[in-house]
Image 1 (cartoon, rainbow, N blue to C red):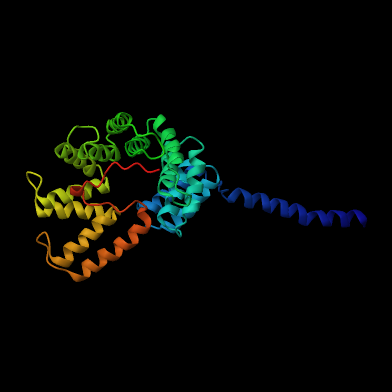
Image 2: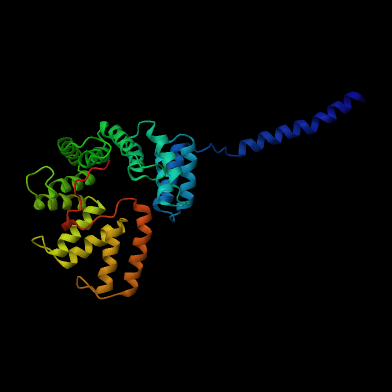
Length: 309
C-alpha cells in the first residue's frame, strides 16, 4: 500500500516534468537586448526611420543602454535632456550624463562639458574650467574642442590672451572643415585681431564656408550681408534663405529678424502678422536655450576684444 502511494505521488511530478520539457522545446527564449541593439532601436525611433518618430520611446531606450555604460547612448541621453527632446529639459542631468562620457575620454562629451562651464549652464560660469575641458578635446584633435579653445584664447577668457595660439587652433579646426572654426576665424579677420586692418572680405568668405557647413551664427551673418548687398550676387531671396536656415537651427537673432521681416514686409515679403508673432514667440523661447550673450549685428563689430576678469 505504501509503495503504491509513493508511485502515485510521483506520477503527477513525472507528467509535469514531461510537459514542461515539451513546452520548453516549443518556446523561443528571447535573450535580453544588448546596449548596442537598444541604441540602434532607439535611433530608429529618434529619426523615424521606417517607423513613426517617437522621441519619448527613443529616450527610454537610450537611457536603458546608457545605464549599461554604452557611451554613445550616454551622450544621446545628455543631448535629449539638454534639448528637452522626449523628456523634460534638465540641464543638471544633461551635464551629469555628459560627464560620464567625458570621463571616459570621449572628445565630443568633453567639449560639451566645456560648453556648460563657459555658458554657466547647470554650474557656475567658469572659463578656466571650460578651457580645461576644451583642451582635453583639442588634444585629441576634435574640431569642436580646437575651435572653442581657440575662441577662448582670442577672447582671453580663462586663459592668457594669445592671438597666435587662437589662430593656430582655429586653422587646425578649419583643416577639418569645422564650421565653428571657420566662423570664429572669420571674427579674427573681421576685427583686425590677426591683421593690421579689418579684412571683411576674408571674414565674409569664411562665414560663407561656415554657413554652408551649418553654423547658425554664420548663416545669420551671411543673410545679413546679403540683405545689405555686400556680396556681388546678393539678393533678397538669398538673405531670406539664410535667415530661415539660421532660425530653424535655433539661432534667436535670426528668428527676431524674420519676425521683423514679416511684420514690416521687408525683403519683398508680404507682411504677415501671424508669421511675425510666431517667430517672435519662438525667439523668446529660443533665448532660454541658447545660453549665449545677445550679439550685435555684424556691421557693428560684434566681436570686440574685451577680456573678462
